[in-house]
Amino acid sequence: MGLKRTPLDAAHQHLGARLIEFGGWQMPLYYTSIVQEHQAVRAAAGLFDVSHMGQIRARGPAAAEFLNGVLTNDLRKLPPGRGQYTLLCNERGGVVDDLYAFRTGPEEYLLITNASRLEADALRLEGRLAGCARRGDVDLENLSDHFGAVAVQGPKSAAFIDACFQPGPRAASGLRKNEIAPLHFMGQSLLVSRTGYTGEDGFEVIAPAQTMVALWNKVLEAGRPFGLKPAGLGARDTLRMEAAFPLYGHELDENTTPLEAGLGAFVALDKGDFTGRAALAGQKAAGPARTLVCFKMAERSAPPRPHYALWSAGAKPERLGEVTSGTQSPTLGVGIGMGYVPPPFAAANTAIAVEIRGRQTPAFVVPRPFYRRS
Amino acid sequence: MSANVPGDLRYAKSHEWIRVSGDTATVGISDHAQHELTDVVFVELPAVGRRLKAGESCAVVESVKTASDIYAPVSGEVVAANTQLGPHPELVNSAPYGEGWFFKIKLAHPGELDRLLSPDDYLKQIAP
Image (cartoon, rainbow over all chains, first blue to last red; front, side, top):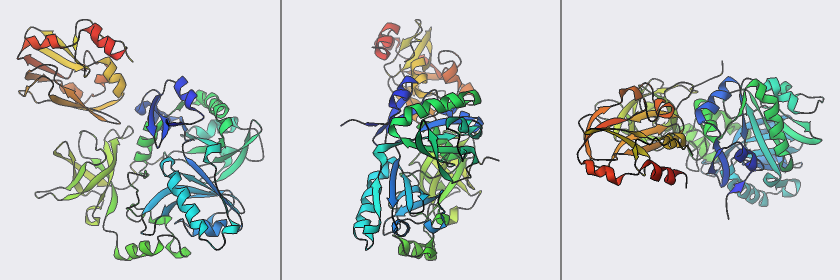
């Protein structure tokens, strides 16, 4: 069987995108160049196909209780129309996926998962539900095949987003960060959230698969006068790296805990029991053995790349860990990366070295994020 | 695919070009190659004085996404490396046959040039 294609596959080909495989899907890596698309998002706006991501819905009187027993963040904090970043962990506190949980109704939640982890997430949730006393009060459904999604990201997004939807009681530009609301497009109800993965202002839109092409075209038409450009996974990766957001499979995996990754703010140890809680509480008390740092190359050099070794600086270098993500930052013009090191080496300004083709290349730890919209 | 394949050069299957001038030659990567890489962010060049064998990995081109090895099209001693690529790696994209050159090499065995592709053969390889 070949690669899965999103509803926008023909649109990407029409735009001349360079296509690659990602998580079992055929996706655009770039349309013109990664750097150009990255810069368009920082200066104006970029339009991303994110239809490969998963959508799992949980509804019913016990939906909140069920999800709160398996996700790390506290779902009780969500009023209807709000979402939160959260993690799904295994019993050892290792990350199965990082995802967004939206409360789309009084007893309805929508989980947006990584494409590569959708199957693992669905299996884990279904398995857990099967053993739940209140399973009759939870309707769990994988809706991914029915929906596509796009992300509109950049400082100019709010200027044209409203033109994409039919007028109504709520405007997309009126949504606050992490809010989600149904808006109308061609007579269909779409979900629009003020969220994103780039460190810029922006919106994500979940729509029925058959509406995706019309939505893509409408957004391009509304946004082009403001500088909107289609943007691919290459720019999505460099943008999230500058914002120091983790990517599953790089900073996160089943053998890494949210605490090691610096995501303790999204782990509500006091909310009651959830999968992995005991292991995470133990790790918090003892202190994690390794911690994720951001670092910058100290001089002009080849960029750091995943799996390059990290070493301490000085006369007798010690191997500290590995780069998990790295690139030449288009905004900063210098190599940037993330990786795990023992906590004594995690302080800002700690000098380290990245082993690039056998040579220790100087770098230093910096606070996250590398880039923040001022 | 970029069909800019100057007629006065010879090409390696691995997308390097070579321009011969007497017993030295200039080496770079083709327009097709830079187009595939897109944004070049760093180039690592061989040291002046290094002796290369034809086919030997001798330089690295880094784009935003990947690092690619560059292979010596012929054997010889490196007599110059393009220091402009340090501050301006983007020259590889904007002028792959001109200012984006990589290094100059003194030919050890000029006969090796016959093993390289003519412009027509290289064009056939990239645009079959």
